[in-house]
Length: 209
Length: 82
Image (cartoon, rainbow over all chains, first blue to last red; front, side, top):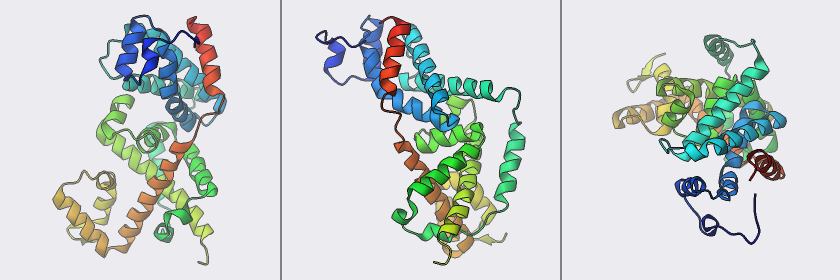
């Protein structure tokens, strides 16, 4: 893919996504590498964040970029390149989830009820008064990662896109086919669920303080 | 739950996403802040909610395996014949 000595115009300066897409469409395939470098970490984090399995995440990332570059020639730019890439990544990740789950899918209402029941058991949150550096530890990261794994994928996806990847409510809604109100509702429940898990963890950690 | 500053604890919890995003109206925002000054339960909820988001954001720092991009390049080069 990289040909030393054959430096193309698109390699020489930092180009916008739109410019790189235009170069690709004019036949300069060297931009594949630049787009890959720019986005592979984000796609990996999204897929791994949801699937929690490196092999599945790698299969997803391969499939996503293959689809993207197979179709980039006819990409008309109706959305930005990054939105299109995210949409393909989200859809491919969901396909992988369905493949894994088979017919064993809980209706979303049951999932919401399960989360609400869990939240009913909430305790105190004195720990939240501690400074950030006392709260941040490898253990805490492990705990929240495990809690993310407990979340159903529909909730995990919203939290990943919104809180970890930093997309807006509207962007997440467009990607997942949800209204902004539905995005906020899932986000809120998911955050409360994660907070409950951190409550349990920190209460035990700071017991006796 | 009783109302504090014209906002109930339930209402505060339901609008936390907007509060955190800063998308409440200025009037709602000041009512929320007044509620939080006077209601310890909600104050703890909001503080722990914000810390949860803060810890969650640390997951952004997860990096893919070092050799992933090379495998990906090789895979695409083979599939796309480039």
